[in-house]
Image (cartoon, rainbow, N blue to C red; front, side):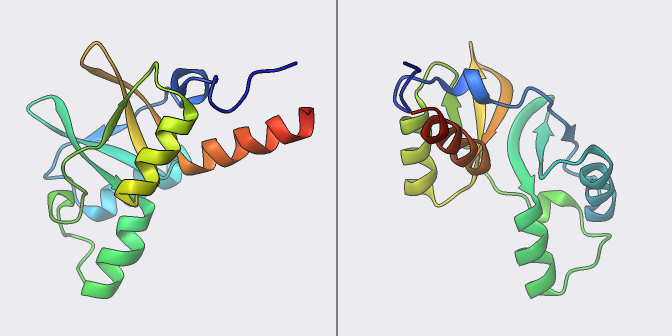
Length: 134
């Protein structure tokens, strides 16, 4: 019998590949980073510390609806503050936090450091795997 959704920890399924950018990076540069890396989120660092996040959704919503230039710096369209979850929290806790904040990506922290990202897609994938194995 495998673990249940409430027993699996965020650190068990998070993505450890983190890409970050300076707030002065242009939207075009970040879009290229996302495309090359095959990722949908980049952390925005201020003074070397992750302070916000820019997601593919930020592009779709903010740049398109506000008709912003691709030269727009990411500090203008990123989401602040960065919403985090402890690496030892359960997937249920992550799902509740995403739902309450209406977001799809959480930065995972351990000892005050960001060590990964967990997404709503990660949660759905894990839930599907659990159902396949039951």
